[in-house]
Image (cartoon, rainbow, N blue to C red):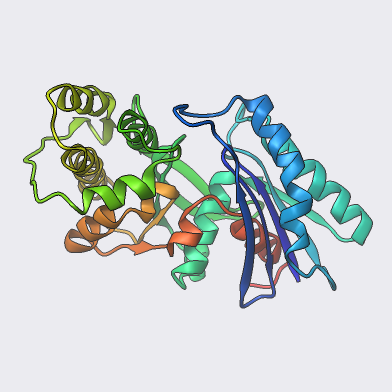
Amino acid sequence: MYIGFDTSNYTTSFASFDGKNIVQSKKMLRVKSGERGLRQSEALFQHTVNLPEVMSRIETSDITAVGVSVRPRNAQGSYMPCFLAGETCAEAFAKAAGVPIYKTSHQAGHILAALYSSNRLDLINEKHIAFHLSGGTTEALLVTPDKDEIIKAEIIAQSLDLKAGQAIDRAGVMLGLDFPCGKALDTMAQKSEKTYKLKPSMKGTDCSLSGVENKAKAMLDRGEAPEDISRFVLSCVCETVSEMLRRIIDEHGKYPVIFSGGVSSNTMLREKINSEFEAYFALPEFSLDNAAGCAVYAYLKDGRI
């Protein structure tokens, strides 16, 4: 049995993997109504409180190895204090169990969870494109096999300002929804019959999403319906991601494409991408922040594939 820990900005997550099946246990961090996020000190505190609870829900006998995310991405200087909660707990767990611990990044965990969920773990041995779309990241990555880290991810496109998840959450809070707002905004947008002809703001393969928030606020000030504003915001994100992928293919060539991160669970985005491209999406429970990819990482580092 392989165990994974992930203490991201908004979810405390614990998972087990037996080489075939993954069991997950999660708890969202609490964000006060009307607020758009948490201070790192508050996130770290909540993770510390949540970890015993999420761990108690999963059987942890016969452990072979432990995997844990300790940084946002595998890049020099990449650091967030909230990952210390998972790292400390994983260290203690591995030491008590007398098993090895393997440390990776939150981003690598997202990619591996998406590959597992879409039944494409074989892509760890091939070059492929991975989109990581969340509140903190809007990036397209060229992923290649790596002897030490299993996969190496190089940024080939990104948002130059607001991230996709930020645009969604800020619009949602503006409309009175609780943070994080992705699922509720998705549901609200389905009630709209409006269509929008949009031209994404691009600079090469990179995008800009800062204008989305301003336009959504202007729509609200004009008294437009919340469901129409929701559809506008999500339409902007969908069109922008589609244009990013289109330009990436033109520049880098055609490779298998995998989507991960919470924004990737959006209904409109999946429909848009699947209508135009051949791509793989993780199931929603593996798109959102999770420790599943960390458990898979421990499995892979242990030499089982």
